[in-house]
Image: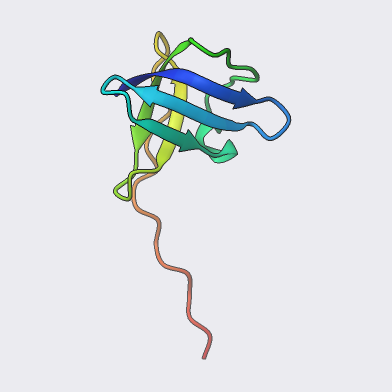
Length: 80
């Protein structure tokens, strides 16, 4: 999916994007992991991957490929 950067906080490495239907979707610092990006500008086109819960799991420039999807994470071990 592609979107347009709405806002970006360089210190927090988080922000939000407008999807092509106008929905505002926030993204957390982990979304940029593996992208190599250090800075985003408002208005910049990006490619993103959404998780099952609708959160951004990966984000990079529209002209770059998304990093590999790690797939579902196993549940944390339970204490006995």
